[in-house]
Image (cartoon, rainbow, N blue to C red):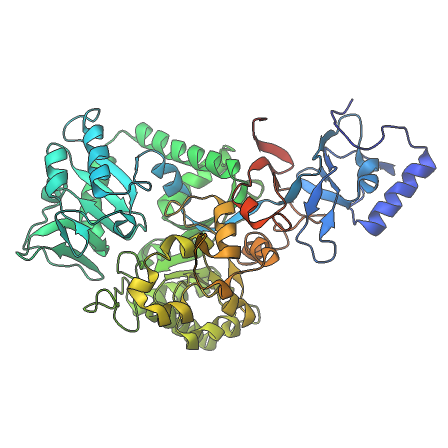
Length: 588
């Protein structure tokens, strides 16, 4: 017998009643009839008694749905779905809980998310002293000479400036005392800046005579001595040495590390209701690893991957890496990723005019326009989407110019759906260009409220109001705006990003230009069907309609109707992928 806590009656239906119910269901709810030799076949999974938000304009609300072979076959009322229940059907009574399409993470770093869970977590530190203490504690269990790594520090979010410091950035003085026998590498929360202690700098050969690489900066004190802060491309000076140490590990150890990172990232996503994940930049080597894990059925969520590698390697190898719906729709690779500037928090975003709090700088151009243009041409040649990281207003303008020029030179009868990743700070003149060109603004709601404490310091109030996280202005001008978290920069939790998107609220007393907030319906679209559209997957996922993948999340609160304060308290009850329960919260 099927397992159920069903709200509906278990009485047997006579054949005429059963046929009537099927016909009513197909007419009213939409279904793909399950028949074998003319006989109705039972579904594998049925959800009943729910408050289902479908993200389908034709039928936005439903009570129940049926799933077979990983696809939704019918959706409608409880009575409509009754005929799909057979002796072996798994029936789940939602008991009025809110269900919707599984969240699609629109821009984050999948392997990086897993790796961040295997190092020091610095996100919650309120002072530099706390971080020094974390590292000192780690030295007690780490053999001398081995690397200590961490991620998540942000100088603009500390309770007070470190001492000593240069322009608010910590020096290596205290860290050298805490970890004299270990190389230390601590990545900034943004990923666009790193701290290294004296030991690590010595391994990398960095000293007062080391010059800034193109697109990067080694911050030095008044005497010209590096203080341990490496901005943008300068990070590679230290990361190269760390990578060399990693490469000396046995191959089996490296494989185990990669697999653990994927497992941890998958578990974290499922626990937070994410069923698909748009990975914002993996090397060709990482894609090979992901393909191997997909073959083994070890990808816990569906991945859509942007390749980030050198133009030289892309020219020679890209054709071998295009995958669409590989391994039962668990791996797609058909996009390229580049970065043209850095992040605002590290003063690396490329601006049209100088920073208000650092008037000697307008940020950093981290990749030449010629190089990014060449990547885009490779994308056109191989029918890959192009996705370029641009945060500052100068960076966004330059990328829009590149796209516009190439669209004219290489016209296509179909929209290319090229993307700008982040699109955080725009000049007002460039806002309507997104919709006009069909360029997708791949944004992250949580960045707004996370960064808002320092955005006015960096940009000033006028620039902040006119162009910072202007989601509503972009949508009103005809652009598609998608959502995500940029994890591990931020927590991968979509509920926090959804809350930021619809409130833009930092505290009860401070809201960051609320006129740019999304409606709840817009915010859900940005995390479901619009993210699917941005990956050419809107016919596969992003809404709950017959024929689409049965990727569903069940939540404790109705994100459309619940009180605003309750949004933050919303928890994931269940995550379903391919019609199977992939995560279920423990009962309270």
